[in-house]
Image (cartoon, rainbow, N blue to C red):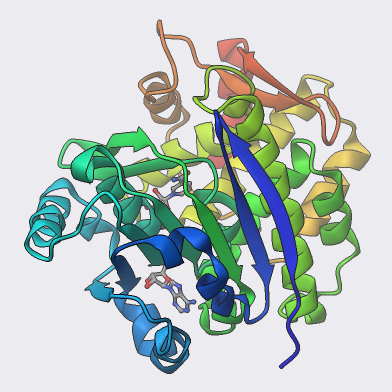
Length: 362
Ligand SMILES: NC(=O)c1ccc[n+]([C@@H]2O[C@H](COP(=O)([O-])OP(=O)(O)OC[C@H]3O[C@@H](n4cnc5c(N)ncnc54)[C@H](O)[C@@H]3O)[C@@H](O)[C@H]2O)c1
């Protein structure tokens, strides 16, 4: 099959790295210096991805002339935890992994966050390569250096910033991705479109639903979206300013996801959060009725529609107050002042917020 290829140069802090995107580009791993110069390569691979793509993965690594160690991770969110990470760290030591080795994640955001966390910790840091296999991980979690595991007391609480040395997004993996997972990624892609990624917004608005699973379309979509995220990270690696715009729709989305006790997908929660915030921005006369219509029509086309959820607005507000990104009892929102124009650290009058949440959730 023909190979499509796009390369993005990402930069964060004093580090720069390439993101390769395309169909069949996983094979390019063997051209990468970090991989080839490492004394050992440790692959942490999603059990599901290994089951579905075993031949392709093994075939690619077959004559790489490296000492490859393959660890299969049962990649449910509950395994993205501190105790499981400790098990892997001990295993690394037993296998003689050194700081000259490289850790390579192959999987979605769970495997990427987990492998990234281990590589940040082991001997104070081992180089990391991500091979994301879900749409969400291609456009979001593999870029930006946030790595973390969950504690019993909270999600992504034990973490670090550890930038990858290379990212390979092979859209070939997306052919086996379940629809619900695809939608989870699309919600993040749309978010980028709304907060300034004009190319992605236009691509989504003009897309024919029948072509979105085609490799050419996916390569373009992932490339635009990954470029946008990497540019935001380049401006603000540690999230002390503009990087917070990436939380657009997530403040309400996370509250909804948590209050529904994670019985709805992340994509559905984010979509619901995006709709709520769009309506709030419209009420605050920041975006027009026709802009709201354009956004809702894209969401409908891709199945990113609002769920009819009954949740207490008071509970949503309480939850948002205690979100780790808020302080002093204030709720900080990211709004848009017209499509593509984000503003952050925004507060809203409690009665207006309550009314809008009542319209949506009661
Ligand atoms: N580090 C960050 O900046 C960041 C950003 C966003 C999300 N995250 C984290 O990412 C995680 C969610 O990631 P996700 O949405 O990729 O989900 P995921 O990693 O849980 O993968 C979703 C499901 O798809 C399966 N899967 C993966 N690739 C597949 C493929 N090609 N074909 C078939 N099945 C496949 C997995 O086995 C899993 O069952 C969460 O833990 C979240 O906290 C991190």
